[in-house]
Length: 386
Image (cartoon, rainbow, N blue to C red; front, top):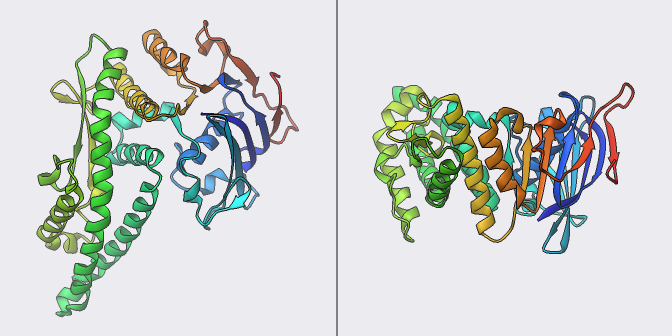
């Protein structure tokens, strides 16, 4: 799989961008602040419907514009697919496949598969559980696009149930059973959608675990062994079976846990049970990576998660596009070499770098300079090697 064309309109700093891309390795080279990262961010957004830098869509739209457009032509096994995505803050995004409108932007998921390496990846090790949950959910969605709908359904139920919890305390004080009875209904909805999301995550972690172990061994052969584990707010179902009744077991466990935490949830006005409270635990030997890993070990673990993602997607039949956002500048020689080895066999690698020296010297690359001069106003058009 590779991206043959990337077009942007009013995305981030770019008023317009039209890039004809190729298989192999391409490097966007230029000073920081000139829009290199915005190019790979647009591709990641087309792959996941999310940014690796912000959690809302508004910052993606160029100042003064009311929408942004990201257009790609993706080539997979010789077949081309045109994907157009319109991003409008505060409104539903719109999308087209081969110029035909689709009902939901989620229908473009799966058209482009990418794996992104970025300086922000350190948050996978050092950040909050939400960073690791997002990593799992984004990868699960790339593998199985229908998971996007599961996530959306769960988030909707979570918002509704949280609002109900905030009002339930007053209802209990007044002796009004209405809100409490309604809460029982929303418990059922949360358990249904939450169990499906947790099942997808558990299956993913099971597939990722050996790949993470192998990748970390490659990056840090003299370090402690790496491992990952899914920690659930429903302790009894962390190790749920992988048989066909997994979702039913998870649903029953969620309902039981919700009943046990009902009083605490009403008192605090927040939902304390569900996949939004879970975490991906990262281990080095007998210690959790967060809080115990050195800077180098943290980078190795973060890279291992991304390398594992790449190998997992690749094993399922299609090479994902590798996006390397200024990551070589963050790595020492051994980690650079390991990442370069993986990238050497990828069908397409798109790299950003502030200076040419950040790129492995033995790489045969196409270089696209990204240097805006006064008056450029965020425009770029590249149809050859520039």
